[in-house]
Image (cartoon, rainbow, N blue to C red; front, side, top):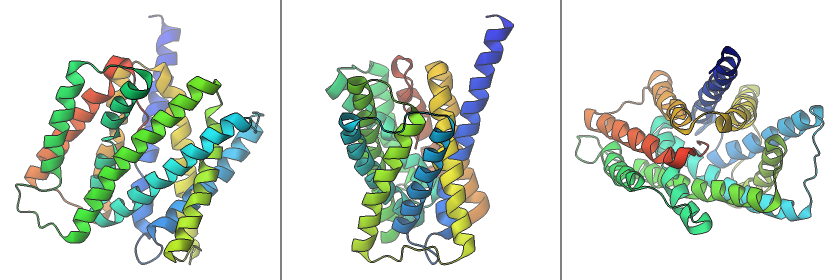
Length: 305
């Protein structure tokens, strides 16, 4: 590898690391204003609405074609609906079970993605994937507190269920995006995420109205956090990961992406005093290791939550 190739690879590694760092704050932003200030559904609505505005503006500045065509748009509506479900579950999981816990559970999507990819694309996982999946199940059992002296409230258990549902729904989202891309050709990722964010905002807005949740940010502080969530995580973080990940070998990319759940857990401890028992810590390590092994099958790494 010559120096120019090394520099090119290093730039993508740095960009991927920055992207993982940015999206590690997504759960923290949600928890900063979630609960008494704003509800989880309202936060999701502003996250994707402001994110769509930023992404459409960004795509316009880059002179990308904004309208992908009606056949593509149908798939993006489906993706937007699935992404709405993802945020609907995940934001609740963050508030009920904690930022780190919710993020680790959401990243179990790598196993659902592999199984769905086998059913849709006939991509057969290697035996090591199934070993990782079984290990992840054991890790999650320990992570949620089984076998430790951790007191599990009904609200906490609801958060765990929502976190696992997030992983299932997000796996469907990734496979839908992949399927649409294979059928309809390549579409610029910024434009794709702008439309997905826009349609997600519509569905989340409807859900918020049904729930009767106040949708307007009550303070300038709340709006500032929402804007940071939209720009840092929804727009820039996603772009950094999507643009750099395909240019990095799978094993390295999978390892770098583990920064997101690890950092989210650290931020949860630092900002909100979210602690893990020794048994939960072991469970987190086993789960993250299994996620890494499961994510690098055939050198392909799904984008993290």
